[in-house]
Image (tube, rainbow, N blue to C red; front, side, top):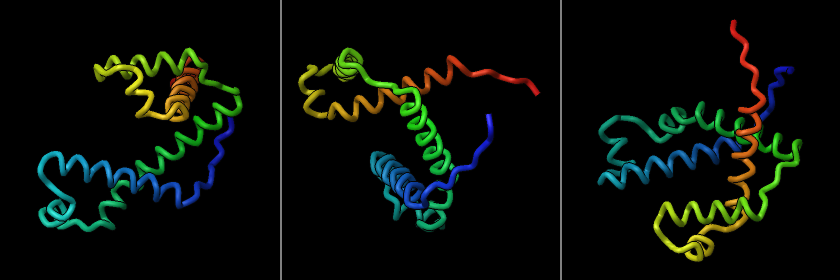
Length: 132
């Protein structure tokens, strides 16, 4: 397989960094902190924090794009039974009724998670590991 480098639009990486920042801010707030407090105590700036997240964000975007390409190429679909099973699994995990889950999480979102998981499974099943 050829190693082909793909140009990723900067906006995709920036959006992923934004997501990382929101998640980080949420985790800080759940512990009684804030980004402002974090910046004050670490001496870091928002630009430095964004730069720290950049490599991981780039890797995440590349992975997501690769999986999306596999989904498209292999015509991977989420079957109704897969979607229903996922709703049941979530409902059971949070100990709520399935209708509550269905009203909270759009079917498109569940479907996207399922096809990406199927793509990961396909890669795992077909991976050939070469020792160097």
